[in-house]
Length: 216
Image (cartoon, rainbow, N blue to C red; front, side, top):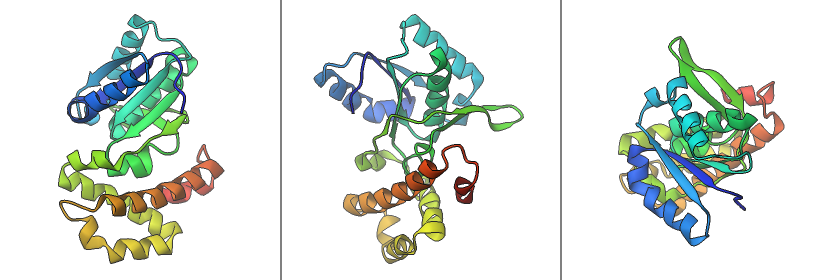
């Protein structure tokens, strides 16, 4: 993955505290200029108000169309940053660095980006495919255990609809996967298989006109 220009990293407070220094170090080692913006954690940040704040920040930073917006976090950060990347300067390159099971297996894959309105969730958005999705299983170690377990619902859904062998793998290792210290290699195997299923469906129907609707 080649990143041109400046990287504009968007994350939430908890994820930035856990992983921001590591990402900054990688960018610095590669000689890539960057700036970061931290939003509060939680669904309330997925709003036009926070998106407007990010537009102002990108403007102050003199972001250009060839620069890259990078989302570091779960589904809320990915949706918010993706929406901003899709709309600022009529579209900027975008990279997802998901840090939750749900984001890795669903929200970061597929290019659906949106913010909420008082009337409902995801009512304002766009299709904007990321240039890359880089999922590091090690980031899951910082997740609350309940949130880790909740994310497996999407993996199970993919398995039920599309992959009996993945379903068998989940059943075989259910105890280990739901433990407080799951094996990283097993998590990697399960995630890679689930993500591949999602990516295959999305690539066949990127704007959810038919086949992709089966995953809903």
